Length: 347
Image (cartoon, rainbow, N blue to C red; front, top):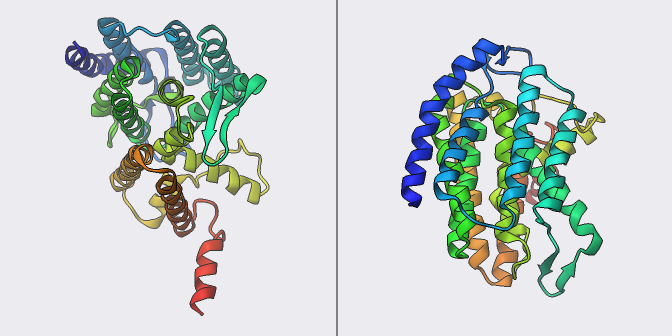
């Protein structure tokens, strides 16, 4: 039945996307070029409706059961409405956060999904107590926006999200979590079908309708699969989502260093840096896909490693990430503490 649902979802996404393209032009849901964007023509931008529609078809074929399911779906509907309003009306950042907050509150309170504790090596269990609700809400909003922020090139957010969802599915198989396997895999199939129209040169953008929905679902599925397990619980999804999380983290570092508001837009995200170095549009997207795959593999290895092996893996990853960030200028062109240290030692 899972393979039938995956096939139906994939085909539905391919069929629905052209219909959404026509709808977008009809209702004026289009993205116009400006100084911050790399496309040069008017593009339809509510492709997330096709992803959501195809996902719901697959979901109702499988009907996976979980105590959190209703809350997750209601939250997803709130997120879709929020993204659609932004794609149509370009609502303020504060209004978008209100929508994300509403979705997170629904899934945490009504859906009952919370990060209650994590297990730390050498220390043991750390209970969050009353902080479990705000921590869970912050996680959901943070990952939702991380996916939203990388949606800057044709096929980028859809591809990275698909890779993350496949990684989540693999981890769920290892843990025999049927609901996460079903939900993550059909969402991956929906996103993959959309990529046929979204990969460079794109015929449609997913818009905030899609990026917020994918970010929300990935954040929730990551919590479902990895909360309260006998490892450093949140490290696995953090590694798995290394590309969007790193891009968001260093965007914050960059803006603090430049004394700009954290929410200020710029053209120094990961994909902008790679384009500036000289990679083509398609090459940049494929490089980031490769990075996302490496993070996914690292997350699986981390889950199977011993404590010392996991610590060593994290240290190596942090050093590699820092070097990569400094080389491409992700945190700013003059941000090179590790490279400067290497040069000093070399002298």
